[in-house]
Length: 116
Image (tube, rainbow, N blue to C red; front, side, top):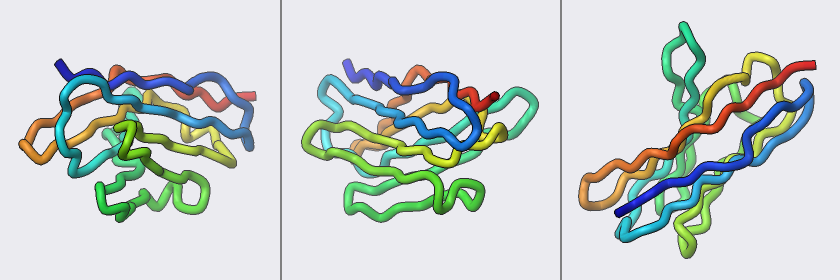
């Protein structure tokens, strides 16, 4: 059974930093794509950043230059380094991973709150 466990969320002041982690356990097989999304009540779900197994990355315009996505493919772990955080970054952040076998696995979500 595959599980994705997220960690690293919390409360931070504007301008601060956080690092989110998403660790996969179980027989996930070959991973094709890894993604961070965020969800805020009353707003559409937003893809924040993604990275392919080949290290191609995508960032939403709202986080470019502030967030960095990375992965440790040997450990099946995904990271999101967030800097210069703004109140509008407040959301529940979810990770998911797509395997070559067309399966999608989700993390449980972690709350990020940016507030003074």
